[in-house]
Length: 241
Length: 241
Image 1: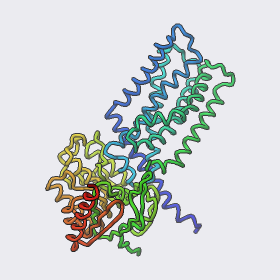
Image 2: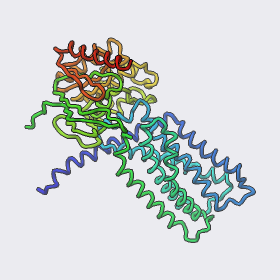
Image 3: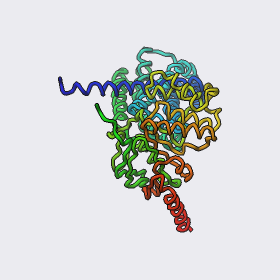
């Protein structure tokens, strides 16, 4: 019998326990969010308010927004994303529930992965639903590939929430989590803003770059891979911060 | 056939540092199957930290902890451990039944709903099972937390001030659950700062003082231990004055 055969059973068992924990947390978080509904309303209102304020400050009907528009779009979405990553661990702060999750069988990676997926679902769905509204506010046509636009939104949101969830886990143990998350996240969100804005500009044909969206999309993919891998290495150390 | 280890929990030279402060120093003890041990100590003595280490939610900075005769995988809880923390670990927006069903899924119980119903019945909360936990009184919430801790019929109970807010009937229920666990070969480690609780529950009691176990005694020697505990307080007050 090969020497690795006895390892298969425990490994499969560990993966199955992690999967069970992951899906249980996802199910519980979805139940809490659909019951509360407040975060959906808050995030939507937040994006609309930011877009509206930009509109009032710039007046899109008298100013040619063109190359600036992707920046406005991404800043609106990233502000909403900050709410999404902060929200992930908010439920667990109540009654010290995070400790209950940590004490349950299954690697803590499953807690982290569930929070990341939930934050991504939040941010991406808000991006998708509110895109037409922001376009309308800013009087911008959706010229270009809709598929590429959605891909850029997905990649940008994934990169943002992956680093955000790591900081969210670190800040969850502190009293000032809601303040700490944006402060810690802002410098790391810089590349997402740059790549996302440039890729969106190229997709919408409002950018001055002639190289097209793909170099920026590849940069977003690279950022996502790095910031999905980094938390996998660090997540075990963040729970006792 | 593999023998069941006689020791449920063993701390060897365990120390825990949080920031720059050593919260626990050189803690040594063993908890045998069938035994209830009580750790007495004032606020800030390190009792809750000790329990978090025993529950595998934190890792020691120094020393070794063994559960049921073996080492644990890092950062992973164990279904054989029932942990009742200082907080209830319950989600206030979910009902008692939904909370317990969620934890039953986390623990991998075969029939989560039925297990949750049975656990709520044991603590007398069947009539309130559909009520959100935010509508529970403090005592009801503690009962529900007890139901959660005993959900998977654990072999090792870790109870942090478990009698807080419980009425006489609920106290009796908890006593019975603890006795039931130790009676079938499990073990219980109870944290309290109440001498009368320690005397009532403990087969063995230890005093945790400024992060160290300074004295321990069997139940027959409790009076001497209680006197030593009072002396420690008097000396502290004297030194403080």
